[in-house]
Length: 167
Image (cartoon, rainbow, N blue to C red; front, side):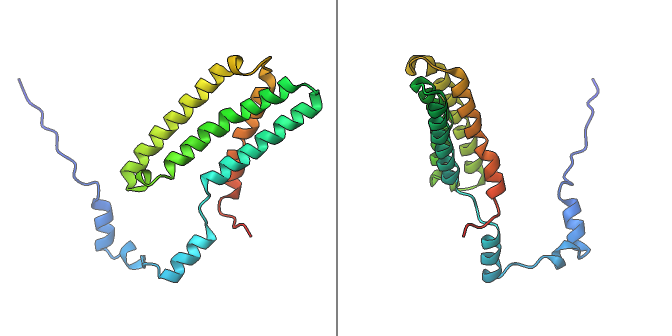
């Protein structure tokens, strides 16, 4: 039997080392001063996940009230409110998990924490949707789904908020 030896590739960083040796990016890189770093943070502020959850809750309550006013039926309002809760409650759980001290220890812990809390968020959302017919009397699926979708669309608004300073 013939054994084929494959050459090992240890050249992952060779391009960066070659560039540095030629005086490329290393000369162009300058560390920021404290004032420059603060100005950069002020120009691109982080968006709090709690702000997103709060706006989702507000949108959910508004949709539920609007559904109640338009239809005059309480079960439609409760269905819409429950639909909003299927987005807000799991989102709040994830926000709590992601803002904990444990999830911000290092990059590896943060990545694992994100995956864990995203799985929890999905599981809680699915469980809440499965329990909806038992928990909400005379459930209106259209109202529930409209509120759920509108609350999820708040994530798109969060992308628009990102980078804009609130005054």
